[in-house]
Every structure is written in C-alpha cells, then in structure tokens.
Image 1 (cartoon, helix red, strand yellow):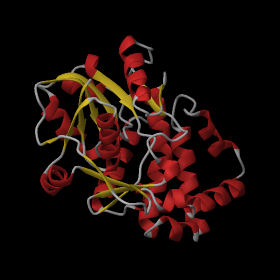
Image 2 (cartoon, rainbow, N blue to C red; image 1 turned 30 degrees about the vertical axis):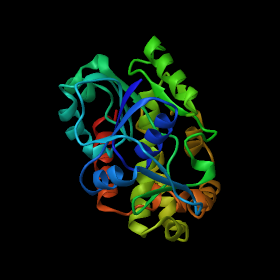
Image 3 (cartoon, one colour; image 1 turned 120 degrees about the horizontal axis):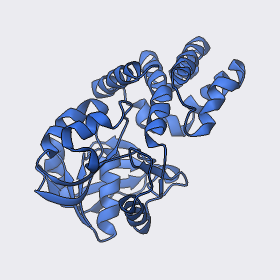
Image 4 (cartoon, one colour; image 1 turned 180 degrees about the vertical axis):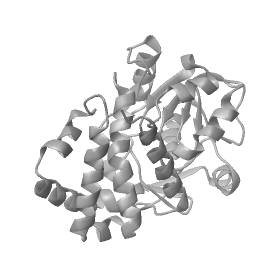
Amino acid sequence: MKLLVYGAGVCGSLFAARMHEAGHDVSLLARGERLTALRRLGVQMAEEDAPVRQVPVPVTAHPDDRYDLITVFVRTHQVDAVLESLVGVQGDVLFLLNWAAGPKALGAAIGDERVLLGFPAFGGTMDGDVVRYRKTNVITRRVAMPIGEPDGRTTPRLERIVETFRAAGINAKAEPQMDTWLRTHAAFEVPLGRAVHAAAGPVALAGTPDAVRGMLHLMRENLAAMETPPVPRAFAALRALPQGLLVAALQRFLKSPTAVNSGLSDLSPSTAAELERLTEQLDSRRR
C-alpha cells in the first residue's frame, strides 16, 4: 500500500512507524522543525522510560500526486488547510481525528466518495522529538481503532483497510455509526478538555469536585442534544447513573496515569483552539 500519513504528532508518528515496519510504502508529512528532526533521526519512540529506538520512516513536506490511502492525524482546527492541500491529490482519505461536524464538509472539499472517518485509539506524549507511550496505550492496545464509511456501509475498501491495518499489528474495526461515534466522543471530550484547561491540569481538576460536577453537567447537556443514542452505548451511563457515582469515577480517572500521561495534560494554545472548533461543531448540529 502506498500510504501518506498527514501529521507527524504522536498518533501520526506511531502509526507511520508501525506501517513502515510492516513493509508498506509510507511517507510521513511534516513541516518546520519536526520535518528537520525526522529527516535526521527518523521517528524516535520509546515505551515510557525505555531506551529510544529510531524508525527510518521516509518524510516529506508535500504530498505526491497519488496514494492508495491518505490518513490524516491533525487537530480539528487544522483540517481546512489539509483539505486545501489534498484537492489535487488522488486517493481515499481517512480522517483519524476529533470531528463533530459530519462528513459533508469534508466531502464538499475533496469529494464525498473519498472520505472515510475514524479515530485513533492510541496515543502518548511528545518529549522533545521523542514519542513516549505507555505499554497499555500503544497502537496494539486492546481497544480497537474504529473506522467507518460516512453512510455506515461495510464496503470492500473499508474491509480492505481494516484488514491491512490488522495485518500490520494495528487493532482496527469497522464502525457502522462512525459519525455518531465522533459526535459522542466530542460531547464528552469538549467539557473534559475545557475543564482540564481551566484547572491547569487533570490532577488539579480531580481535586475540585464542584468543577467536576459542572463538567459532568455539560457532558449530559451535549448528549441530550443528540438526536440518536450515543455510540459507544457505554456513554449512556453519563446520563443514567447517579451524579455522585459519576463524579467519583471521573475524579479517579483524572488522577490516573492514563489521564496524566496523555494528551489530556497538553495545555497548549493548539489544544485550546481545537476545543473551540469542536464546540462550534457541536453547537451547529444541536437539534
């Protein structure tokens, strides 16, 4: 498979390295200092505090004319620029990112027939130019990466992509309600991210029960505004279970290594910009 990985952050770098090691023709698109570092040392990655290993993934600053698949790992507010750069590039495009606006805006720019939706079920943190990840949060983790067609069909190309990823050691699955999945995730992610930003970190937020209760209230409002049940179904518990039980569970999560050593601790302006765009997308689709 000739594959372009658009975005050289944590998820894009981990994904590109795994696909390269599986023998695929992979190019990792990066810009600026990140491009320079990748050209010099390749993708540098390490499991927590283990020694850093280098994967010589080819990198590029500009896409070629044609690919079998383009996978996009960028922030929500960066998608417009990505779409503009892919107008003249041939190949299916799998958007693996936070996106609550639905597929129409994507298809309007590059063609409806090219669009697939998904979300990366792995992550870590950037330590300079090194991607650090936890053993339980690597690309082969137990939770499968959902991928779907905008209309929910199980098409030959979707089956082919899922099988290709699995063969490379990436746990992927076909998700028939991918748009709803992404909206559900945003309904949870936006209040969580904003509350963490306001508290200056997940652990600080965990120590403020009133703020956690306010965050839960906004999550419930977002889920109630959806015209369909949440996907995955487990998110329905945010509306059904008692507030006290949920607040305690959220506090435990915010203090856990999963929360502390993940992108949730990223308080950068880029994270704030992404949350703002996701908020706009959710508001535009309220029933």
